[in-house]
Image (cartoon, rainbow, N blue to C red; front, side, top):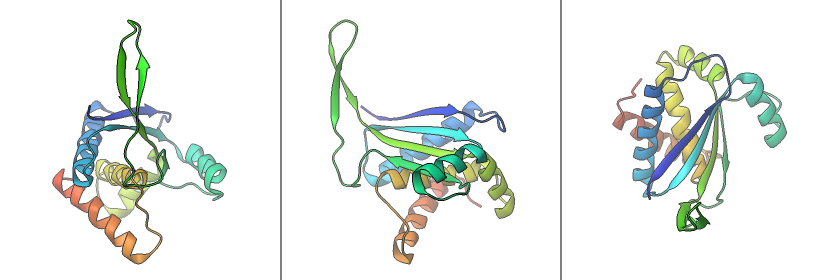
Length: 165
């Protein structure tokens, strides 16, 4: 088994090139390796500000757009992944690893932030993706210490991939 990235594009602002997906998959592998994760699936969806605004309002009670949302399937970062089995068309049992959850990124917000921070859109999308993945693993940034830990991990992964500011 391995780590797998599934993605969807539900916005029209940006064509998503295969090279971006390859880069995000590399970031996923680097972040997972850093955390000792070897199996699983992450679902990524690109949306616009209107869509993420609705999700933020409906699921978090915050009535404004945001840059990234994560919907984790597991509550604890140390929790073992469950493996489920399905019967394929030839009645053979095959193991399927659970999904970690969904990451939703607003391309609109990512583009604006990349301009504001003076770096590439690819770097901003990478940052948001790693940020979302760490949330799926159970990390948060509710206080200064946990925010610093998350930031440090994000920057280490981005640095390894050559996505510096």
